[in-house]
Length: 493
Figure 1 (cartoon, rainbow, N blue to C red):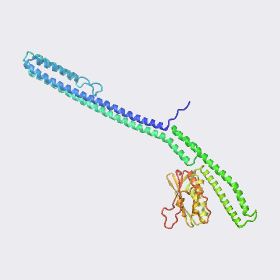
Figure 2: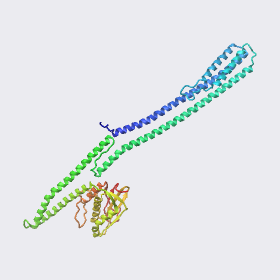
Figure 3: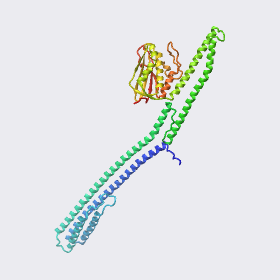
Figure 4: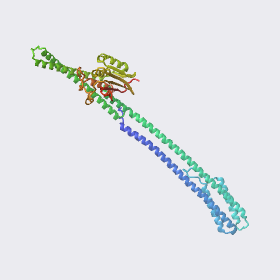
């Protein structure tokens, strides 16, 4: 069964952004819906309160109209006044029914604001008033005080109805406020939950995407440190996997180029050594006058040929040595090393040389352990120490210090020699480059020592730089040279 295609880095980012946008949109729509619902309920409650207040006011107005018409009818016995009383009574009954109607759905506190008991008492009182008014027809002897007392009781009932309406309105407002508070609290929780979920989603996505990117970074660092043996395979999104395949292709190409370079140097060196050996043998025979006596000019020519063939022989051997050092730098064997003991051994190895010139080698540094290739890095530091011995004047001091910088190891070798010219500082690590200043009374260098040091330090993932031994030397004091080696992530904790 074929495997499903892996999503790309861009597709994952798009999905993540869509998820975050969808999550925030859902929360926003939910909040908007809650707000709209609360707004509708609030508007309905306000309209309900206004309507109830109107019904209560009209009920009071109808009561006043009934009382005025009844009193006038009691005196004038005008049938029109009796009709006015009856119409007002019918209108008041209508308003009472409205006050007893429950609120529509969706409005807070939907129960009727006027209870049945009070409404029944109001209707009973209205029936009493109707009997009194009907009894007054053609009977002027009806007691006005009795009628007034009946209307006072009706007014009292109206007042209690108004109180019930006001209490119902306040209860409705309180319930609506509670719903608003609950809705705001729920919305706040939803927003906080969405934010927390978005943060978790973003962190999860960042970790999921950062892991293959760190692998890409480590692979690039490995290529920079010339670790070409391990295959590069980076799991993750499809485009990141494609980058891993490209990096592995680059690793293979670099390994092939290194192999081609090594083969070329070995081949050229071998091809040059055979005819050069014959040439040196022939020049030696000429110099020994085996082929016959030579004149003075011929002897001088033979000497020049002998010196140049010897120089050429040394160059070929240097080329082979440089190739061998570069090859060895690709195959480091890292092991924990006690740095103070390791440095002391390197200094002791060249004790005869620096003591013969009356030099002092000063070492300084804390107790550290570093994971390095002790043989190769020791050869590089010994090369720097050897150069410092060659260029230092008699009685000078050579400084060899080490210290920790984070997880890295820093080694410095400083001398009190003539230093390095400014124009040559950028080229001293080039293979076969020799500076203009050479030690007096000694053989000229071949120019590969510092290049081998640079190769070895780079193979350890570090770098070597050059700085003046003293940024502000005293007047007449030698400037010297100070080599600074940085080896990141080398310390053993």
